[in-house]
Amino acid sequence: MAEGHFDAPVFIKELYETTVNITDTPFFYNDGGQPVYLNALPAGVTPLEPATTNPAVAIGNEYIVAEVMAIKPTPPYGVETQLGFIAKEVVYEPMWATRDIAAAFGITLVEPGQGVPLSSPVHTLSQVEYEYGVFAGHWSPYQNTGNNLLTVVCTDLEHHDFPHVFASTDPEFPLVISVARYWPKLSKICVADLWVRRGCALYIPPKPAHNNPECIDLHNNRNSARACWGDIKHGSVVTKTLLQTENGFFYWYWNAAPTVHTNLAAVR
Image (tube, rainbow, N blue to C red; front, side):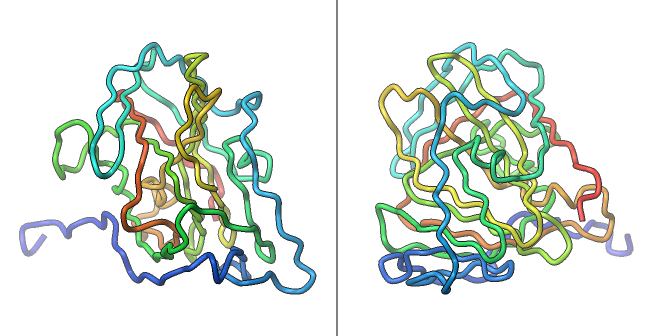
């Protein structure tokens, strides 16, 4: 280290942003691995039916939620809910994102040449190309640790009123999206890491809060670069995301126990 220090690791970089008005372009289309937004799907393409939430479906690693430890409003951004798990650590089950596996978390897998209708309470959204580093998940907004790089990562999940599209556009690696399904009345949660093959995308429709829901579908994308772990020449992935960048309201769910995220074999 000639200069006496390490290069700063990539956390999250915003590379560029474009506006998407879903009144004018109400369809998301996976155009050969690239996300585009159209006023009509190409001829011969039948729109996918967006996945719905079926509370009877449960996959992933299951944990008991012993209590809701705290609910903290954080206006104007959202509400934090701290959950108490019965676990010394929380292991996210890694699995490739298939149609059925994605649907088990209320998510639609959109493969190349497929499209899906968009819904949103707001019409102006943004598509942002991000670069996510392998350490992007090693940070906590909940535990008064500031912007320190952490050696343990807590459970950090969300849902919100606007839609999300997570497109796996990196030329080298798949995308990793952490997901969960939480049953408040049953005091249980199932967690998993969805590995999204290069060229595929996930569509998450708006998921607003409801009174006394049977279950709540949750997600987080700060572990997007999980597939890079173990590759000494690559420490980040690029990905394109559709989201509401201004005035979005979030519902966050977190637990302080350390999480474990395992790489799938043969990630390329």
